[in-house]
Image (tube, rainbow, N blue to C red):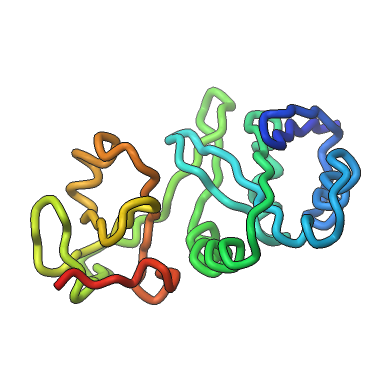
Length: 186
């Protein structure tokens, strides 16, 4: 029997692992006494091996997490509907690009499929990197969730992302950018 660890605003619960996303949401509703409106805007996330937060929005994504469920903590938080929809639309495809595998010691490994080959390099026009000042961001764009108009290119985020100190939203393709982060630096 698989066990899952749930964290709702730092209150930990260890429970039998629900085998479907719907039953996970019902378990959350039962354990934390949530109403239907709260459940509808409930974000479920976990940190992967690289300490990147991954969100789970549907059955397909949850199915990919079940093999590693015992080695992670599912974080649950209630957000307003606008933030929920914005995150859901942005992150829905990103999660689907993940490969969940195990290394030879039986530990879970989460690896991103490489989308930055020369042929598939994404270019974000009209958005400048705030550090290197490049005119076009090539590859993944990082947008600060706190600062207004703060963007980093992939290279600068690798070197200086943690030093910024604020959460950075990873945007793989411009069309997946939520409306609130489409500011252009003039």
